[in-house]
Length: 141
Image (cartoon, rainbow, N blue to C red; front, top):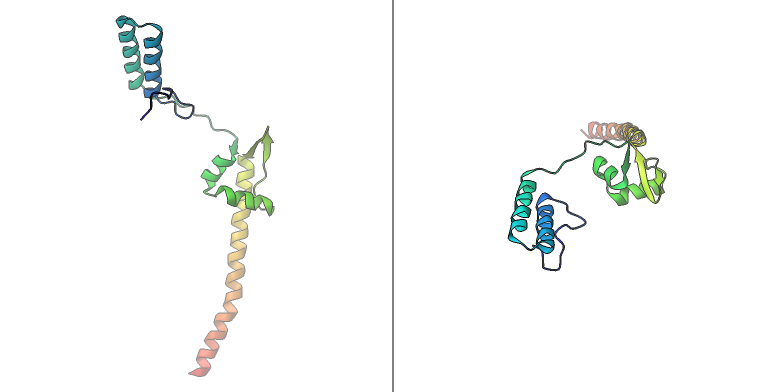
């Protein structure tokens, strides 16, 4: 709930209700007559009934936050991977870091390959131990 000192449309949330309240507030402040207030209310009701437009823009690069959400990686994990040269390639736009979709796909494939190699290396290393355990069990019987 908003307090009296807050503005109707905050910098973080631009929903239709907030926009409608801002229009009513502006009309009430500038034109105190009842006719204008009623017009503002009608406009506000019409705005509340409409969904906010969304732009179906698919960018060619992720921000760090978008990348972390898309690949379900924590921000700290991503920065740790960059520190160890295992993270995706990136570029800067001003002070912002961007990761191209191609670079993100390349990073994902590299992580998949590394995981497959680690699993197959672990499986082949574990196989002799299992055989030794089986041999010891057979000789004990």
